[in-house]
Image 1: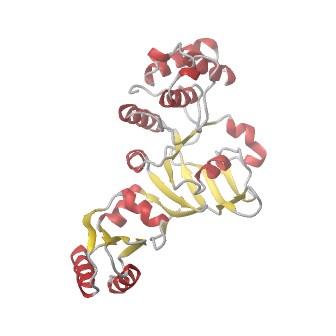
Image 2 (image 1 turned 120 degrees about the vertical axis):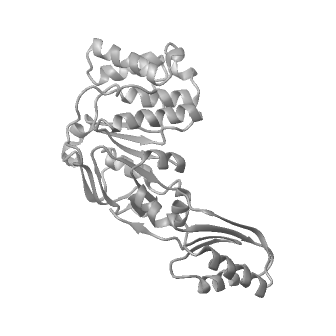
Image 3 (image 1 turned 135 degrees about the vertical axis):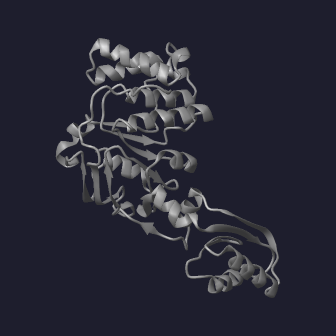
Length: 333
């Protein structure tokens, strides 16, 4: 999937222009529990903005609000300078959306792309050019005449992403686009997206794969229970957490709650301890002192360790320590 960009026309907003402004939207499906609770951020042209969160955290609801599929019960947003409440159709003409739905199963892979091109009013000759380029780019040549119903989940996913590039757009929303793809195809897809971003495409990208987020995204927002817990550039997140180390520990028999309470009292103010049952994850800038404290405390309380490990921090640590109780919040819209 390497090669020249797929989209042929210059994209409207200038580089660095705000293309998506989200201001405190709330949304409830049942009038009781809120799936969105006032998230706010701005996304600029040519940026890849990652949304990370557990199932049910509010990512899909936020995507639906940003793509005009849901109207928030409170708050507002502007997409490409337009108000979705008044300009929904105009917005939908300038965005692409890949959700976790199916392709047109009644027709072939080639037919999928043709139908999408017709729906977007692309003339026949240009439609054929784009269709053939996409089939080659997304590794669909051997599948082009096969009916979508007969494809595997990963093959259908490739068709879903490929067909979205049949039309020109300013913003592409990708909801876990690599589900079902093998390692080589996943990396090829991410590289293809990168080449479009270099031409000015803006991407909003949800994933459970933290390695993908690290590879593709410029900024990352961690969402939980309808709120943003962490929002920053990858560079700043790595600077914030990169000087620290992670100590993982699991306790054997004994008073685990008492041990963790006592440990918390002995840690430095900058240390972050997350506890679940008999296990703990500790982010610390002073690993030697922290390790000495937890071992000494284990001896005085006669508690043995079933597991004890120290390692460098990863993006996964940022995520886990944001969404777990006791985690550290760092938001910078």
